[in-house]
Image 1 (cartoon, rainbow, N blue to C red):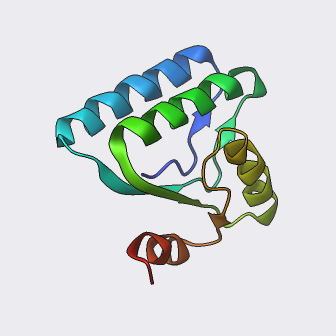
Image 2: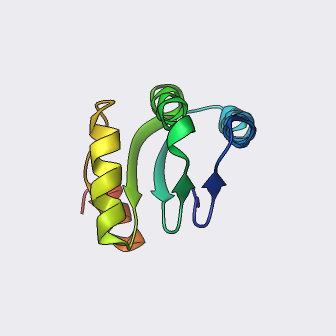
Length: 106
């Protein structure tokens, strides 16, 4: 999933994303492995808790495995803390290649 440059500022932004993902992921009809790009992703703190609930829901319902990456070292630390708070993998990789290798078990 490419969240690069995505801005989730309002609850409407989040609801729109949640609907879009639910529609696309349910269409696939089975659980999938997913790699998410968080480069230049912006999340307003006011919707952060609901965003994390959405991520947790999608992870349980749609994903066999999931991993994330961002080229920004500060943002990797921030994401790791947020995702570990909902008991998701806290390793945020620095590149797509590293994240994909994790999914592939390389």
